[in-house]
Image (cartoon, rainbow, N blue to C red; front, side, top):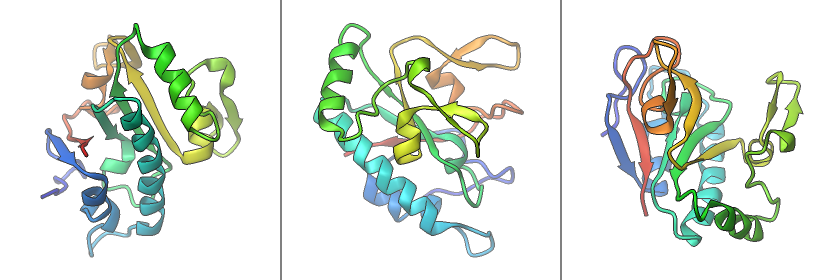
Length: 175
């Protein structure tokens, strides 16, 4: 059972959940004593489900979500996550994923990002369509630094807060 700690974080653990379990969880339904945008959170999970299904269809199964969505923030702006892939097959996977997705959102090229004035930054096409950002983890750095200024890989970066570097839990999406 999911519970937030006193800092509004999940305990440091990888919580395996199906999409249906996620929809029925604290992360969507919230707690009675917290203000909570359950409708927006459910919309985000429904969008996540579309992208996860596409990843499963091309044979990827190690998918993790994080960000403010897995914290006690009432109305997160999006869902962040990563999936484990092989760098040698990633270009083929991207082609396959874009052949499935009607919006062709599977890209991480900086040149494909689109400026969003509300967030005041260039966002991935995936974010503009689904409000979900899923990055491939092929052993590269994440662009997120640790408390010592060292760039972290996705597994490490997603398991601690960016500001205080506190350990936290994440969700592993399972079938």
